[in-house]
Amino acid sequence: MKAIVYTRYGPPDVLELKQVEKPIPKENEILVKVKATTVTVADIRSRSFTVPPAFWLPARITLGFRQPKKEILGMELAGEVVSVGENVKKFKQGDQVFAASLVGFGAYAEYKCLEEDGPVAIKPSNITYGEAAAIPIGARTALYFLRKAGIKSDQSVLVYGASGSVGSYAVQIAKYFGANVTGVCSTKNLDLVKSLGADKVIDYTVEDFSSTGETYDVIFEAVNKSSFSACMKLLKNNGTYINVTEPLPNLQMLWTKMTSSKKLLLSRNSPETSEALNFLKELVEMGKIKVVIDRYYSFNEIVEAHRYVEKGHKRGNVVINVEHNNKS
Image (cartoon, rainbow, N blue to C red; front, side):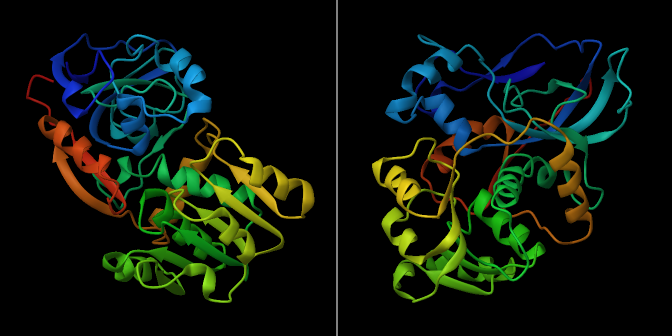
């Protein structure tokens, strides 16, 4: 089968299209014919090995010291089940599925084996494979953190980075739970964030979000570009600050935790189960969530796709369509 392989860390050009062995599902696995995958920030960091200094050693152990342990990137996908292991009960040949492959990567390939009990579910019936592939990481992350924050109806929520993958889902999921949502984004994305249901949108290029006089029950930092001290001024007592990209607290965060009743939720992976995907499937089919796609690329254009995402200005998600020849 065809796959995008990288054997060393570096710029997008380290990604190469190669022929590799097609996987065979184990007794508890399904084999999925991948129709679409995405380029996420996590793919960019893994390819280039740009991780926070405190995580250098753990990341090297996980990803590989001298070269990548897992040579095929890709952390979310959608496709069709073509075969199942002998003990698989939940899926059958022909099922259309979407899944996260954050643990083992491997979605940049024509075929991918997935554990039946992992983060894989039947695809929403009202969207394309490309749209479905853009749900498992961003939407699942937003849902996980908003649930951890105990999101409630009529709470006020600020989403900083509201036009990105995680942020665009955070706006919509918070609205589903009945919150009053303010989104922060750039000028070109104001209409997009409004269309996602935000009650108010702040253009950070012309207005300081921390000078509005508003206070919030939840502040959701999706891109790690706001000032923590500014966020703390706006966060209510007993409120929750979420930062999905910062794994470790700095001294200011530790001091806040020690001296106030404000709660901090920092970066962590959501549970590797299907529960969140099934919940999100229902929301999509109910019309409560729409998937924001910035650009589509072909499998052969994945280097260009990585270059684009690496610039840090994508709206929503960047999708890779995986083409198959007639023999595959």
